[in-house]
Length: 342
Ligand code: WQD
Image (cartoon, rainbow, N blue to C red; front, top):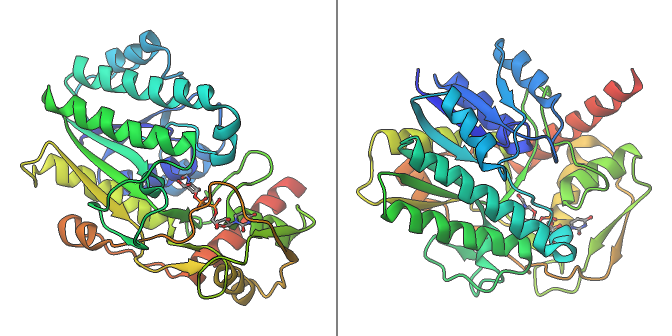
């Protein structure tokens, strides 16, 4: 079995990707220092898979410690690099923490890829690299606008660093630009575990619905969109996870003559915040307690994916509907509350 290193394997997308990789025949080890993730997430992964997953609690900003993991695990066929800080708002207040961590860890994992002759690299990027695009349905060629936050800047810089690195060595790379990952694994054994008050829409919805939050705000209803609230492309985390397996297969099978390829990972459908809330209310039967508040600084008005390249070249077909995403998010929130009650 080909062995893959997943950095950030205890995180939301990392954990779901480990499940998909193993179920598609890969052997996986994780590197995650649990600074922003809950190690118990791997318990859920192991329950789904029926096998142990080794996680090295190692800070990727510590090159020697990271090299030690690769010394103990030879013949790695690929690296999927998720580990990064990702809170847009926090990055505005702590830019140097974000640059040091997100760029420092990326440089170190790429150094290990070079040093230990790892041939394939998948980088966790984001639609945030488009900034506030001139078109709503962005393709991989849509010109990037200035990032709206230091977090977004680390993703733009990360793409440049990966693309520059593959030019000068045997590494091949794929950059996956996620739109808005939401939902939970159908087993409801793994899902998103936000640290503190959730910044993202869907955990804010489910925590308000279950009473963890007294209410929530819609950040602006006066945008030039069909109902005044922002438009996003919500994509199920399991569809995102499977795209990583397909991306690795694509690299290992040498499907491209290019040293790096970019793919948008979105459904191709844009939904407003109000439409997302109404979809949640429909599947949960819960009337959500929300109010309309001021716009949030840095918000993009409207963006969704043109996903034709991932569909045609990776053979990727996102299947989950918005209602299925909301249904699994709600079931996961109910599970978290039940676990806490025990
Ligand atoms: C979505 C919409 C908010 C909360 C960011 C990153 C992206 C990815 C996901 C990491 C916006 C509105 C939100 C709330 C609201 N990050 N909203 N009330 O900002 O599109 O994307 O997170 O993987 O890279 O850029 O996601 O969920 O924060 O916001 O009205 O309480 O929901 O204004 O329009 P965003 P989000």
